[in-house]
Image 1 (cartoon, one colour):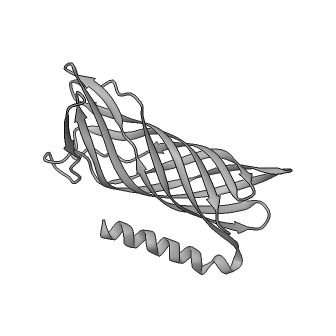
Image 2 (spheres, one colour):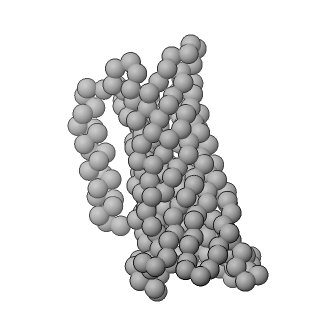
Length: 204
């Protein structure tokens, strides 16, 4: 966790170092997330379904020239999935500290601008819970080995589109997780899909 935070801060400081060559804005962002995880275990079939979560945090924007923007952020995000196994419904809701870094191409469509973006995200699990049949709840254990539920570090790709509405930005994005989150090497757990609808407000 300390290493993840340190790398995140170093990335932000590096962006500040080049901000003299760019127009810079800072703001806050909140979003509604619809997510689903892929779970594959030898000999077992898990039919996973979407659950609703959310994301909230800080966003910055570095504008280079007339067309290109760089948008790094620091978000708290709740994701997950649900599935039924042996008659029991299980909901998995891990929470992450997430750092998206999107490259944005903007098209002037006066009086607004169309935003097309893509980029990587990096996330670290900091909490969350399992819920069994709506009654029994346990905390998610992060780590490696059979005594844990998920590996803490996740990464993947985001891509989407949005509208620039002066101080506001309305965006829709698709996130594809690439990391195997299973602490056991024979299994596969991936954040296979996160659809996020977000609204950002820029202070300056």
